[in-house]
Amino acid sequence: MKAILCESFGPPENLVLKEIDNPVAGDDEAIVEVYAASLNFPDGLQIQGKYQFQPPMPFTPGSEVGGIIKSVGPGLKGFEAGDRVMAIPGLGGLAEQVVVKAAGLRKIPTNMDFKTAAGFAMVYTTSYYALKQRARLQAGETLLVLGASGGVGLAAVELGKLMGARVIAAASTDEKLEFVNQLQPDELLNYGDGELKEKVKALTDGRGADVIYDPVGGDLFDQSCRCINWNGRLLVIGFTSGRIPAYKANLALLKGSSMVGVFLGRFRQEEPDTYERNFTELLKLYDEDKLRPIITQSFPLSEYVAAFEVFTERRVMGKVTLEIKSE
Ligand SMILES: NC(=O)c1ccc[n+]([C@@H]2O[C@H](COP(=O)([O-])OP(=O)(O)OC[C@H]3O[C@@H](n4cnc5c(N)ncnc54)[C@H](OP(=O)(O)O)[C@@H]3O)[C@@H](O)[C@H]2O)c1
Image 1 (cartoon, rainbow, N blue to C red):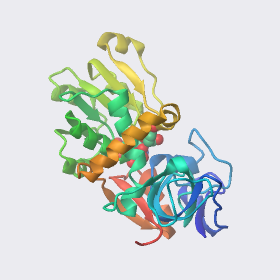
Image 2: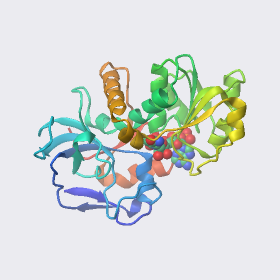
Image 3: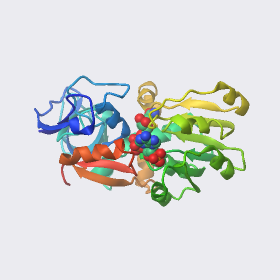
Image 4: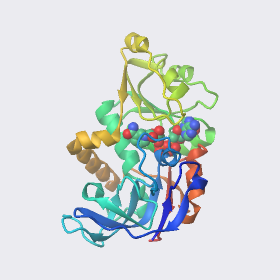
């Protein structure tokens, strides 16, 4: 089968598209024929050797896909060849076939296409967990979302609105804000000039936001600590800016605020029942037409470099997928 291989760390051009052996399913695993695979920011870090978990070389990147089960191991219950699924293999998704464990498989509704299936799990389960369990976001509270046009940011805007919050969507350009505006946030904030704190205060009568969703880190995190409301929760999602910031404890004291870590992978391990319940609720919201995942760009497998560059060049608006087989 064809697969993208990372044989040495570096920019996307270092990746190669190769013929490799088809994967073989273990006892409780399935082989999924991949129709679409989605990319996320961590995939770009991983191929450069900058992610916190590095697989042994060579490896095929790609943590989530949509496709059809081709075969199942003898111990796999509840799935059979021909099932349409969204799958979270963790690695190996940028290939014509991938092996997936039972826990990473989910049948998809008939009204969900494979690109949507590929781009659904990571962004929605992260943002739902962050807002629901970690921030305990309440209707009527003000939610500030940084990096609002990106994968997890866009999901946070959409879910924040559904949960009844007043949502301030923030991004670095007017083009990105115009894109986010289709989800009808209550306010748009452009921090492209580096200024966040005063703009948030102006939009909140000087009090600051109740919940801040931060996938960016760096200077925006520093300013967020200073424009958070009394009892506010600052959600640490990631560090796309490239700098892991330091938290000033005196600001937590003065504002009665908390910095709250969010780590989807560990949550899934530690609290599998809650993770499953969240996932089921998200699929129900999709079924009820309350979630509208926005796939903006789709590339053929051979154009993987261009697809990765959307992330490394800070151009993401919505979800980016690779189309590996057409439906
Ligand atoms: N904690 C968890 O469990 C978890 C789960 C999933 C993802 N994450 C993390 O969440 C972050 C976002 O992931 P994603 O897949 O949603 O990424 P994405 O689609 O690329 O979006 C990231 C956003 O970050 C902003 N950004 C600021 N500085 C940037 C820079 N130098 N380069 C690129 N983007 C920059 C961009 O918006 P502006 O240009 O508007 O600033 C962009 O929209 C990543 O750090 C990822 O590792 C964490």
